[in-house]
Length: 585
Image (cartoon, rainbow, N blue to C red; front, side, top):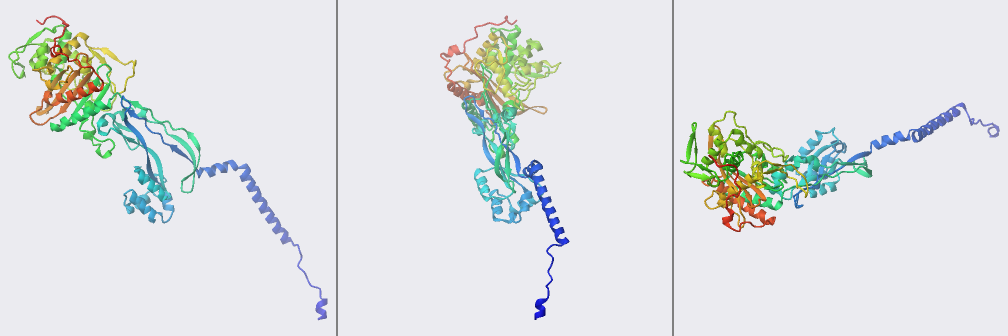
């Protein structure tokens, strides 16, 4: 025991070479970490910050909306309303296991009325996508419900949807936009660049699921579209639409059109077509409904151009307001075809030719004129060319007689066959007569006081006034357009009934027209009513289209407070006081 106590115990040395090596390694490693940290946080800090932000900072668009479309009195015809559209991030949806089987997802599919299995497969087919539209312009209540489900990978974008308060009333004129808010028809398309705004942008921070958690600021302000004020008067437009629709339904017609033009300015106050559609519903935008018949449909104008043939006769100097034409025996053969009147009217003055709508009378006038003298008026009033409204789809019309045309072809053209016009072109022609021979450039945009616009004197004023006086006979007793009368006002107009051309000749379908001016003493409105293919025995312009003219004119005159001018029926049908040219031989 004593030996054990006296034995010297061996101890482990406190420092060895291994210990120093270990310490050195640790110090080097720690030093490397500190150096790296300093490099990253000081030297390379900006680059790393940008890299980090590239994964969380995004530039998000700020939506802009189209400008308003207003009528001449400030009534809204089209406006943009905010709406939500749903888009998906399939990559995020599939990265979160169980999302497509969750109760929230089932509720999401049900809210959008989608089959859950088909929707799941649709997402899987786009597994590598980060953005796909699912539903545009969802119902606001549905959108709010989906937001509350808070499903990662289901996102919303604020867009604007076009709303048309007047619906069918102005559908053909105003047109409509597509799902991307671009104009597709009517004014919406014609003035798309003017109405369209410029979207803005802002910087945002998003989380792992690409949801916005912070807004950094606006990079570019959104510029809203310009408002557009049309020349249309919604009150007159509503009357034109209602009366036209009633006439089309009552007569079992295929369609129709009404155009109202301000004679003094060339502004289009109404432009209605039938059948119509609701621009707020995409399922009603079928081609047969969306066609604006006022500018696209062409027809042979029939007797409505007889006053223009008389204008040509007076302008040539070969006829005067006192000239008489012998229409006996009521028919004549030109080549292998006949020109006929319903009966033998005998000798007629120019007033009588227009009042009785004599084919023989205008044919004999036309045959006395050179081709240039006869056609000059047709060209001057704009037949065969666009009116310049700028609306997509406007037809030029057809006015191209053959170089060696026959006498019968020339005679037929004098009473409205052998060429074609649109309702707006015919309205322009009558507006020129009402304006004392001045052609005012037609427009769909409201003109301001003092605004300059293209004007041209295309018919001598005294001739235009004389022919307007003659057209008053049409609405007087014994004329063909008595149903176009407006109580308290003098009316100047002309009926027209033309058979529709078919292959090899003419069929049994008709186009009925009434074109007129009111008040005749100082015309304010030029109105054209066209009804296409009325059914039954009543297919005349005086019985189908003239009543529509009367009701539209009556409403327009009272709305604009135009003073009555029919103080005496005798004065209303007085002959023109100015005699133009010399006596016909």
